Length: 633
Image 1: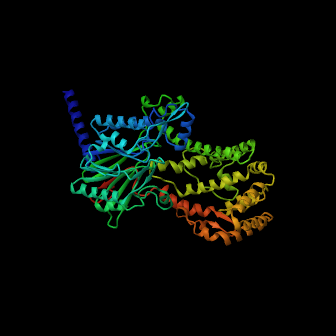
Image 2: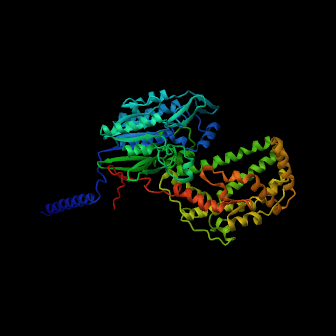
Image 3: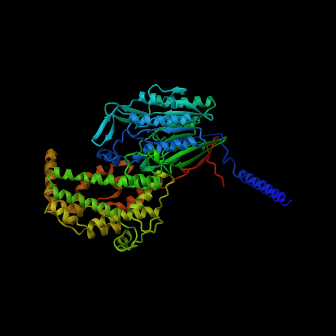
């Protein structure tokens, strides 16, 4: 009897729990109910093991540094991603271009094998090309050097990926690799290739012709008339994601009317890549109708992101994920043992570290290349070595400079205290954060999404840049320079440059000009310039002879008068990337207003580039009828 009573209580408890769960679930409409889903990935940049024959070859190390991607794990990352996709309940996979790193035939074969594995499991796969996928030549990196591999054409692309979109195409564009296909769940894919490839130069150009744009709009209209929900897949973003100066730099389709025209016809979602950034932006008309450009970061850049899209009747939910662990069996056999251990222990930590280290190593490599240039221009080898070593040491000392005075030695905070400046306290994860850590704080959210740089962080970055000049002013700079030319004039840079910079935000140029003006190197440059200037050469020579005899105050006046007379008209019309340069030059004092540049332009750039605006980059729910964002409290 007792056992029956216990059993009855257990049954009642289970029923109560089930009812409670049901009631709770009903409190958040449609959060788990969906009838179709698909994954999106971009910029997988696969380099196969046939290409990286020797991971330790000098040619590959150089190539890897220049490209700053996690190329040595690209194939392993993609294989792991496909394993995860196969085991998921997603119905289809879309890939937004750059399937390979250098368009290698071997890499394309590797990608196609993995995609076949996915389709053999019952999934559907659809691809479009990027600017890295077509080539007249690629390389296999071997210990004895790099070996030229075979070309890979647009026809090859269509053939190798025939089963992943082209064989199911409802319509194709005759001049490109663009096509449409029904992917399931009442969705029709419009996959677009706006890339023009030059066989002679082995280069690509982004060209959206009017004919291709007309074809795209027609496919949107056809999809809707067929009662299909059109979705757009392209390597290049179609909506501005940053604003201001950064949009001027962008190489994408956001400067065209494609997005607004597709939105006006009824297309709501575009899935893009190319910039290796995880971001969602929308373009909204005056009636509130929006098109969403879902930009997915590169699989082989931190944090190895992907998207999952859920169709929930009247709503679409888009979530984001990352690859957190790579399967050991897919890793290159030629990896360093230490690399293998790091990757398998904590892939995300490895990706963060390697992404920044590659950038630092790339800059150092560029600095090191100054050495042969100096030698070729007549500088003795030992002096060239000293100069390059000085630059490298200064660069590293800036990266290692602590932000706060938490230990003995110099810091940005301690430098600022000399000028009665209170450095904002930042909430960084490191116990004693450095300038390098601050740079990471700016860069990592660009890749991961939901950028969150604050005004205080911009302020600390500004004073970190100022501190670079403090470090230079208190270094062995003049010892190095005087070894090149004994006529170098030493100036107290702390008094005439650094103090003024911290107190006014203006970087004085005259002290540096005065230091080098009478050296043999500058004299030779002036002579060459005068010789090439023809009849204007005598004016240049006269100006130089007049300026070289001046003290610093007199030189400032001379430079001001010269700039104001000869160059100010040009400077006032000089607007690179939309920046009015003349607004940041104090011509009377021959200085650059760094403070104003930081406070105005960097804040503007940060507003779109480092400070994320709605919608959220990682998770959105959109009403398909109104295109309004749905927010559950």
